[in-house]
Length: 293
Image 1 (cartoon, rainbow, N blue to C red):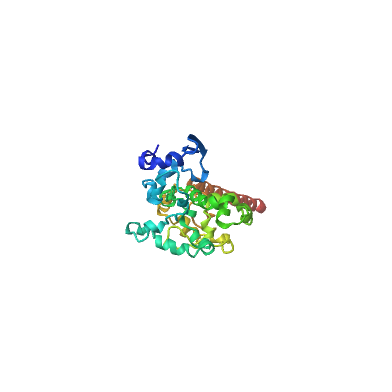
Image 2 (tube, one colour):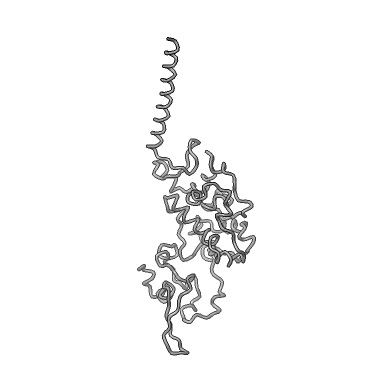
């Protein structure tokens, strides 16, 4: 088990919140009882260990009063910390531009509709957050991680209703205009079409409404693809693209954006092309010779 889990300061929390069930002593009945843990309050210790906050104590973010059990009911009304509460104005995190992220987020449809009730935590789980896009060399991994954030709400009726108070239509139905939906969902992040790209930010946080979302295929499927300024802007991917080791990177006008480029197949396609051209020339040559006879 992770070192975090073995830390006595955190074990008191995780011995319950990492399990499907929890036990307690019922003082009124003077008996030991076992109950099911609320699934939304179960912490995955593996994901916790891989997250950026794995070295934190639970009480760094949650009230110290949570160290006593049963928890006081009023603690549930305690406001949760936002990213800026810790990272705002901190020079050691200046490169992540949290203030700029906040500024862009406040232009988004989420903030315009829900205001301060829509916090960072609605998308970024503080227990598990990991900067996959900055560290991964796999486009598929980056896309999967990012889209899970969106779909954790937009594809979950309970969570969506909790935020919006509305019954949501299915993601597939909303995108019925999009050809090859499955391929797009696997290889392109939702935010490529649903945000305004900001050059100074690694990831744009100005989420657009569905009415303003991008629907022009040519914006991505072109030599000057917008993906160069968003999904493929990460240095770790660009460096690996030079030797062709990362499939799905952007290419020139001979390729559709998102297609796999394999050098051997590229050479093979050229051989087939020139072989076909040679066959046509030879055929025409023989036709001309025969006609003269």
